[in-house]
Image 1: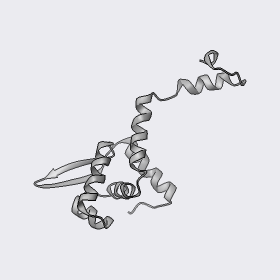
Image 2 (image 1 turned 45 degrees about the horizontal axis):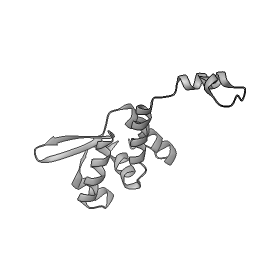
Image 3 (image 1 turned 30 degrees about the horizontal axis):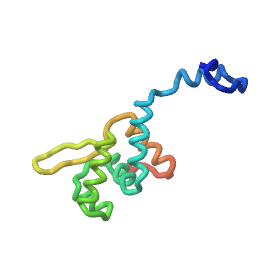
Image 4 (image 1 turned 90 degrees about the vertical axis):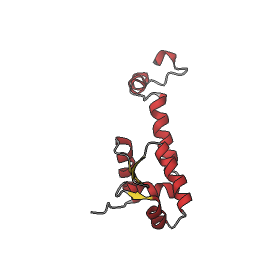
Amino acid sequence: MSDKLPHDHGHAGTCDNLLSHMPDAAAIQSVSDAMKQLGDPSRLRIFWLLCHCEECVTNIAAFMEMTSPAVSHHLRLLKDSGLVVTRREGKEMYYRAADTDLAQKLHLTIEEVARISCPK
């Protein structure tokens, strides 16, 4: 790969090794999409809450001091990005953070960056 680079800065071997580990565009896109969703403070708070419990829209709206339609909008975006999953019980839909490596790592990142401790 280094022979294709326009400039030789003397560290082509390091770049070749780095590029051999570069994630493909699809992998980067999925992480980028998830992080975009968490760029909104309301969605970030909702996601953090759902990392610790499973809740319905009405209760999430009460926790967040938002309307149910606004919460539903945020939940749809989080679900579309794969960060949140749903479970139906009768007429009620329950939401929780997805049990994926990405969701778990983003949860830990939120807590580390914000210096938040998980509730016990």
